[in-house]
Image (cartoon, rainbow, N blue to C red; front, side, top):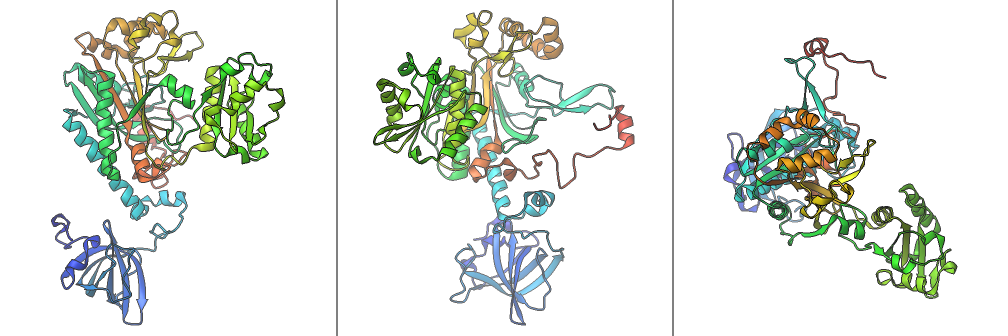
Length: 579
């Protein structure tokens, strides 16, 4: 039935609203000709499409309307004759007859068929994106995106957050990713950057007393593109004062669960949580996919006194592959090469059979070691056990990637499994000068139990940082921020940042903190990634109206392009010849 808001001066309703309750009624609809089928010499059936769907109209065969013509049709809604009902269409029980057709605009033949029944080369789709957007798949994806954004905005409003816009032209900030640089015409030789995130700006809103900030923020990072990454992306960005990590996780959980309910019709249960150490130990990654088992098992104790050189290492880990005993030798060899490529010395494998274990290493094992392997994760006959021996980090990382290579379903495939990962390391490795490198940004608060390790053993310091993961994709991350100057100074010293350098790079933020910064924390998650999973898409390009290719090009506009000589002169920049 037509919605009152569908009616305009040119049409009574949308095509998808025409149904059997309107039989006998005169209606006017507008749209694009999706398909024309001749019916003898005097009649033609036209599928008329708009954003809501398709309705069949019966027109005089002499009316010259072709694919993608824009037309206006006035006619009578009629029940389709018996045997001609199209159950695949919501409007399939009716058609519009006795039609008057007005051609609003003619169209050239499109470069590809605008339906979802044909595979279309993605390069062609992106070149003619304005046509690709007419397809129902893209219409549904972008409307789903709008629905998700409405839900998260409503959730943040309901929780007392204030929507505040922050600048797109900003000062360079060290947040870990390469920035897009914008030359200043009015200040020759100086540059703005486009924000990787509103991180510092939103912290300043906390100093400004807004207490709870949020923004559906456009962010830009000059990083290599992949299925879950574009130069431009959208995130729900929040910051709150007088809160703990648990408060922020609760705020975000509410927004994400509301979005899931809006997108899928079902509200997920409470989101579970695990520490970064637990994630590494059980899954070998910091963004664990909980949709399947095959968790990493630590069997180091069983091999503590082993005589087998392959297992003589600080850590021995194993996974059980259900039904994996039928893996071919070539597949096992390929997995072994993958393990070596990830840094392991090798990959041990054992088929569980009625006679025991089938493996080149079986004859070197003690009876106790054989029993330990047979007991991995309750292994049964027909299973495969894969093992890596190395230090904890390497064994976990390698076996975690092998687990994903064998068992991970497509990221968009259900069920949707969310998990919070907490207590990330404060630092990750040392730079060439021996200083620890920040794992997040340098304003992340250390874990209160680890302050005493800051100077003595910084790589063991945990942070109050937390990530939200869905089906193995990191949706977003956040942290409790440093709001005290003494703690910030300790962190800067640990990173090898002098007082002078800190003042030069972060002076406006540190200066603001001297005027009474409240304890605060925040988070941001990627809207594109969340919507892609809800839409059943493996690539976020499918939920972005005008994305870039993997090489960073815009095939529709031809960007990036050269600018004019006059623009170059005005900006007082010099273009170096291409290497």
